[in-house]
Image (cartoon, rainbow, N blue to C red):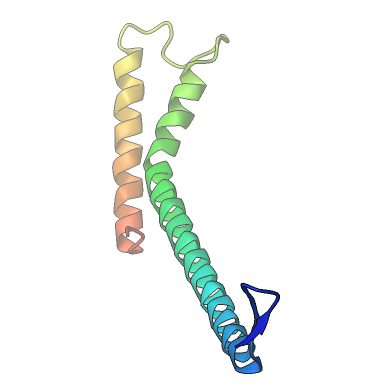
Length: 110
């Protein structure tokens, strides 16, 4: 390096070339790590979506039944019968078992 105005020095072309090479390598590494982090983020999002879908598969039927029974309207089946609640629960259990058998035969479970 040559002297310039006292303590300042001019960089040689070899030093500048070395710095440019290091800068290019660092830029490439930054892009590689950015792509890696984006891939990991996408994988994490996909795993969370899969877990949520698995959970909603079971909670959806509960939400549907409680939503229907939570409506404040007349004409609910079994409202006037003393054992109406148990009749509806029995019918729902039988239908659930039938659907479970059908889905098991189709190999629907995860």
